[in-house]
Figure 1: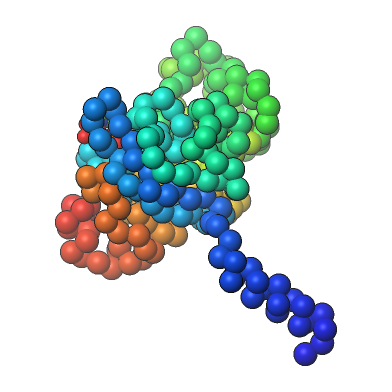
Figure 2: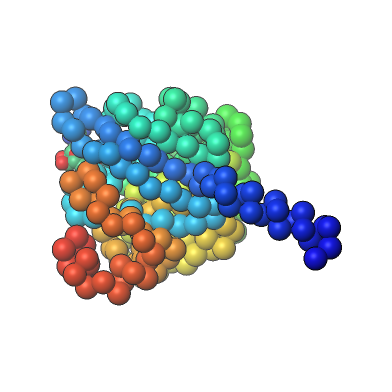
Length: 254
Ligand SMILES: Nc1ncnc2c1ncn2[C@@H]1O[C@H](COP(=O)(O)OP(=O)(O)OP(=O)(O)O)[C@@H](O)[C@H]1O
Ligand SMILES: [Mg+2]
C-alpha cells in the first residue's frame, strides 16, 4: 500500500471510529402542550440527502414532532437535544431554526391572503439566507409560473401545496419538513406532487415527510420511523415497512 493510500485508509477508520453524528438528529425529546405530555422521548437520525418517512396513526405525535424540530412555541420541548449540521436546534427559537435552514411546510399550507403567488414566494426571500430564485421554482412547478399574478389563496388545493413547497425552497433549506403534503388532494394531483418531490430528492435535499398515505411516502423515502403514542416503535428502511404486514396493520392500517 502506498503512503497516500495508507493515510486515506487511516482517515476513513478515524471517521468511523469517531462515529460522527448524523446530519440531523433528534435525541430523547420530550414535549408538552400545557399539561399534556405528547412527545415522549423521541430519538432518530436522518443522514444528509436522505428522505425519512415519519408515520403512525392519527394522534401518534407526528405533527408535534415536526413542530418540536421547527422550534415553534408549542408544544414546548422540555428535554432532549436536536442537532442539524452540528448546530443545536434545541437551543434556538423558531426564527433562528429557520435561519439555520429548517423549513416546515405545515398541513394547512399557510398561504398569505391578499398576496399573489409571486408575492408569497418573494416574501419568503426577504430575510437572508435566500434559497431558490423565483424562476427556478417556476421550473419545478410550471403551474405556479402560469399563475404568478393570481392571488395565492384562490389556487386549487394542489396548487397551494406546490406554492407552500415552493415558498420553503425560496429559503436556503437544509432540512425540509413536510406535514401531509398529499392531504385532501385528488390522485392525479398527488402524482404531480410526488413527481416534484422525486425531483427534489434527486437534488439531495434532506427531508422528513409525514403522510397518512403511507404507501406513497414509503415509495419516496429511504427510511421510515413509526410513532405510536408519542414514542418510536419502529426505525428501519422503507422497504422493511413495506415487507412487514404485521407492522403495517398494527400501526398504519395498510
Ligand atoms: N395544541 C394542542 N393542545 C393540546 N393537545 C394537542 C395539541 N395539538 C395536538 N394535541 C394532541 O397531541 C397528540 C398528538 O397530536 P399530533 O397532531 O402530533 O398527531 P399526528 O400524529 O400529527 O396526528 P394526525 O395524523 O391526525 O395529524 C394528539 O392527542 C392531539 O390531540
Ligand atoms: Mg398531524
